[in-house]
Each structure stands twice: as structure tokens, then as C-alpha cells.
Amino acid sequence: MRKLVFGLVYTALMAGANTAWAAGPDILSMRTGDMKKLIVHETPQATSDATFILADDAGTGSLADYRGKYVLVNFWATWCAPCRKEMPQLNALQKEFGGDHFEVLTIAAGRNSPAGISKFFKEAGIDSLPRHQDPKQALASQMGVFGLPITVLIDPKGREIARLRGDAKWDSDSAKAIVKALITSQTEE
Image (tube, rainbow, N blue to C red; front, side):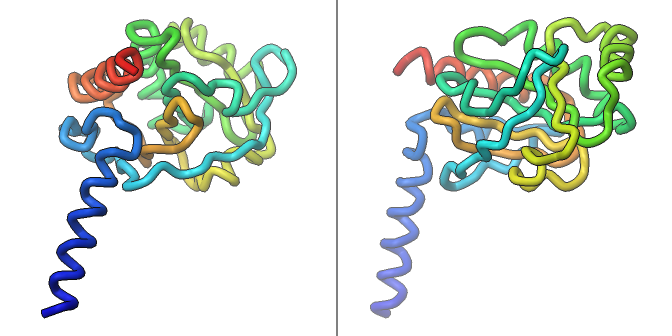
């Protein structure tokens, strides 16, 4: 009986702690359709400090450069059909919500030529997303990205709070509701 009571108290404390981890919205309840694949972590997880190559050989960057806002990091490749399918939707999400509190960050993992990325972006009408690259997959590997596409949601403190494996409908009402809720929670702080 004592163990049962302890277990119930522990569970209640953990449930309270989980909703308070980011003092943010309950995005778990907003997941419908493809967004049900979004795994929301019970506690935020550390991210990698590995660098990636910025578009147009503008140097290197890291996820730390994006602290202060929610970031939806999409690991993709030009040869990945599901990646190519969701890129216009991610572009639309960035156009609608990108700014001081939210950004979509696309990183081509592995062997992707800069010319091939530029060609694909032009053909698909992608005009609001970066063409960053992780050719040696240092960042992808440290972030546990095995298989593409993988999309990671990072909080303003630079911690991973959710992850989606595979493609999703990023222009869906559910995805938009999640992003809106995150932006609203940050602007209210």
C-alpha cells in the first residue's frame, strides 16, 4: 500500500512538473492528423553545439545562434522525396509565422550540392527558407537524426522540446495552432 501511495504521489508531481517545464502551452493536446507524430518530450533535452555551413558559403552557424525564439529545425536532403514534398509547406509556415519569436530552419544533411539545393528551391518556389548544409552530418549525428526528414522543435532556451520523424503536413491547422500557441506563450512572458 505504501508503494502504491508513493507511486501516485510521484506520478502527480511529475505530471505537474511536465506541464510547467517551459511554462508554455500544452501543445500535446493540439496534435491532430500528421501532427500526432510529433513526440513532445516530458522534459526539454539538450541540443548539439556542432556547426553547420550557412547558405552561400557565408561561414558557419550553430543552433545557439537562434536562441531567444522557437525554432523548427528540419533536417532534409535533395534526394529525399518526402523532404521535397513538405518543403513548400515549411516555406509557407515560415512566411506566415517567421519573425522575432519563431523561425523555420532547414538544414540539408549529408551529400547535397549547393547548386542542387538552389535548383530545387527555385523550382519549388521556396523563397523564405535558408539553404544551410550539414555535409558531414556532424550536427545531424549529434542530434540523433537517423533517416530523413526529421524535424526538431527547439525552445527559446535552445532545448529540444519535441521531434517528428518522417514527413508531415506543416501547413495544417494543427501545425499552425501549435506554432501560434508557442509564439503567444513567448510574447506573454
